[in-house]
Every structure is written in C-alpha cells, then in structure tokens.
Length: 430
Image (cartoon, rainbow, N blue to C red):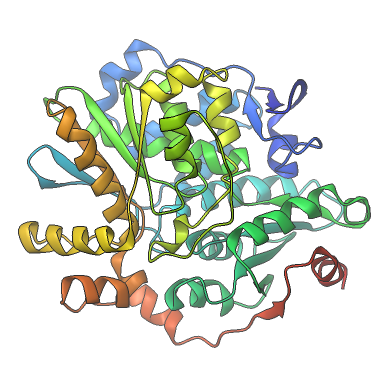
C-alpha cells in the first residue's frame, strides 16, 4: 500500500516511510492511496469474529504486503490485548467503552499499534527514533506507556501546564527512562504547533530521526478503525446505526469515516465537541475558522485547530455538502456536560467521563430528529481519570482502579518551558 500527502497526492511513500516520518515533508498528513472495501463475506462473518480477527483483517487490507504476516499478527495481539465492550445505557443507546487498556483511555489502541510498528522499524535504523507527541491529556499517557523502554526509541511529550488532570499528568511524568515530559506554558495548540515546527526544522532533521505519535501519524489512525467494526458486530437486530464521537483533534471520527469507506454499513456520524466548536461550526456554516482553544472540563477535546480536519476533507474529496450530510455537529457547554453526567447516573446508574458525556449529548440531540436510529456513543476514558469533575457532577465517589492508584503514587518529573520554538529545539538537541 502507498500513502500520499493530503497536500500533494503526487508525493507517495510506503508504510514504513509514512509511519516513521509521521508528517509528510510538505506538512501534509498521509492517507492510503486506495481505501479498500472489505468483501461481503467479511461482513457476513463479522458477528462471529473476535476483536483480534477483525483487527487483523482490517489492518491487512490497509497495509497490504508492507508488513510480514507474522509481524502484523504480533502487532494485533499487542494492540488488542484488552476488549472494547458495548454496554446498553438505555433502550437503543449504547456506550462503546474504550478505556479498558493500560492507561484507561481509547488512545491505548493507537499508541500500542504505533509502538509495535516503530519498534519493528527501529531495528533497521542506525540511530534512535525521537518520538514527539503533543497532548491535551490522554495521548501523552498512552504513548509514553506504550513506548516505555522500547529499544531504539526516545519519547518527548509536550503538554499545556495546568490544563490536564492530575491523573493524566501522573501517567506520563512519573515514568522516567526513555520518556521526557515538557510542561509548556500555553495551550494544546501551542504544543501541537511546536511539534509541527520541529518536523520542518532543517537542523533537527539533520541531527535527529523525528517522528510523531499524535493522530497525525497514520499508524495511530488505522487501529482506531478496528473498534467501529467490533462495535457494529456486537449490535443485534438493529435498524440504521449512528456513532456519536466526542471530538478534539478528530482522529477518532476520521477513523470511523475510514471504516465507513471500507464498507462498514453506517451512513451517519455525529461529532460532539465542547465549546471548542470549530468543526461543528464548519458543518453548520461551511466556514472553517480555527482559533485559540479554550479550557473546559473535557480537556482532551480542547483543540482549536484540529489536524485531522484535512483528512476528513480528503475522504470526501472536499465535497463539503456530502460531508455535512453524513456528519452532524453539535457543541455543548461545561454546565450541559455536568448535567448529562448527573442525569445518566441518576436515571441509568451509568457513570460517564466528561468526554463520553459530550458524546452522549450529541447522540441525544441527533436522535430527536432521527428516532429510528440505534445510537452508539464513544466512552473514551475511564471516569476516574477525571475524578473531581465526575464526583462533583454525580455526587458519588468514583473509585480509582488499581492501575491508576499506582500512577498517583509516582513522583512527577517534568521540564518547564515557554511556548517558543527555540527553547524546544535546544532541549531536543541537548
């Protein structure tokens, strides 16, 4: 399989180059030259397939022969070592729980897939691969834990100071080893900007082997498509299906759109955001206006200029009308998010995290006009990662899982820096 840049379809590379480079030289994002449509036999067998069987079939169709079958099987085994169960919250509404991995967030799927591939490709390198990742919360912890002590890799996590939860911060600032945490004075958008600047800096390109572990990397996107197929396989005797995706950098939604292009019989998606509503605004007005992000209680979605918007447009050949028909966008305030967490717990006994609550709100809004749909909202992180916010909303104590308790006991180690590129460059070269 070849992968082209969203900025120049004449620039194409193989899987290895796309994964290692992360970002194309022209700052575009890599996309598969051909999105394969899975055969009818796959969908006929889908309800009886295991999560790992689904993952292998989807991945094989996307990577072709660029990865030996044995290595791909190892990668799938490593990536899907935990489940993504579908839980009925109320009649016709399901939560797709994506928080059963080691860092209790959906980012574990993409991070472990990427770590396995980069670990395999790093064996062929003469120097260590430096992995840069900007995080608004869960990406940093998932990537750091996935790459911890992976030979031939060095991970540098940039995160906005004071804008991630304590539990999220502890998961990537207490590890040490080959993990460095840079605490940036600014927003997630500043962190993302710095990462992109690093990739086009000629000095860094000469002296370091840089790649990205953000959802701009195609190897993060591919495994996120697996659980859409897995969720659909768990549904029984349903009518039309809609997925509601709490969205920040829009990698998760893009993965769902990729699954749709591969034949998943889901025609409708909902993107739900907090007040960082750049994409819902675009879907409703046709105007894309990136702007500085604002801080909310659903901090992993505090993104004002989402990178994967370019991939969304690319999948629809920049046909804005069709994109707006297939995707409905809604935005919600912190107060609405708190009220949703309280309501779902009081009426259904189900605890959502702030991001899942935003997805739930988007789904309910869509179902008002489309009551014949079966709805699935993505529950992207364990509620305990946002313990204070959730407990204040539902007025009930949320127990910390043992994995999270272990992180909380660790000592935070981070390097404070401003949001200027010069300081980041010096730190990377030091």
